[in-house]
Image (cartoon, rainbow, N blue to C red):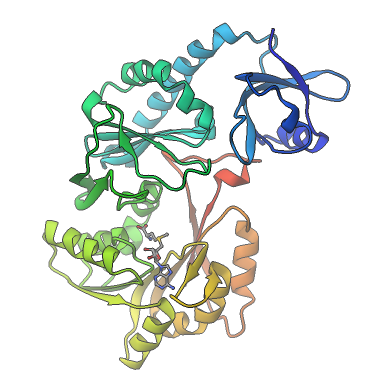
Length: 392
Ligand SMILES: C[S@@+](CC[C@H](N)C(=O)[O-])C[C@H]1O[C@@H](n2cnc3c(N)ncnc32)[C@H](O)[C@@H]1O
């Protein structure tokens, strides 16, 4: 018999609106520590749903697994298999999925596999645990993954905990336990990007952005001058050069990432020119203005909070400071793509904020966000962390 535990009225309300999490509160704190599953109940002892219990997670103590009543623990692994099969089937129907080697086969809550991601980078697969309870079940999970994703090679299977469990942001490790750093080239829709596993928490490519890039292909065609702000290892720069840009400027604070970007460019065969600026974005905008540049495309993807080496600024504040310069640097028929990477600000608030900035003369022509292999769903704002607006 599974433990039945009363939930906070707010958890119940949110769950009824489609939210799949029970966060830490006075109610979830009392879930029995050893229980793998908990049946959440309301104050009249009515069952609400079965939760995957995560007693060691700092914030998310329960993730909705099933609304089926009655539910038995014996059903769990069959359901895991069904959900893995569905995740695979759905992705094989997505056109943008087929053209790249960096892609999510499983995307957690949106695939009804809460807190579990399966990412492919080239021949490598990384199982990402956002819910720590999966880590404990990995022995049972692994054969199921291998069954539904026969592309996985055991010696190229990595695991990584992506949850804050106090152990810090660790790199992925090979499932075999072997300590290794792997450098390899990944193809994304015709251009190459180097991924590195085993060295750091990040891999050199943000795969959740790949379907966004696919959706920009037509917009990028025939655009000659491109500015990529907060470029990281340059995925957007590589895409623009691949699609025929004459020149691309990439700006990032990090010499490591700009060096990586140079290596990425060397792996490709682009005709266009590339220039890196290792400096804070605000400084780069002033420099480019003083040099008299205008760009057909500006892409800005700041971290939710960034530092220029001295002070920390939120992405919204950074846009406030930069908006005038961004507009001045945009060619008359150009477009600017502004991203915000946080679930704490809604898309509506982000757009309204930018629209209301003094001197704004831009209008939104298109909205972009997570899609395809990284789906989102209504009621789960944490899963909808990426907001992008195209301005003209
Ligand atoms: C979210 S990543 C960008 C990801 C990239 N757009 C992609 O899709 O691959 C943010 C990058 O911004 C850089 N960064 C953070 N603060 C910065 C600043 N003030 N000026 C320039 N770059 C900054 C970081 O070094 C990091 O590479």
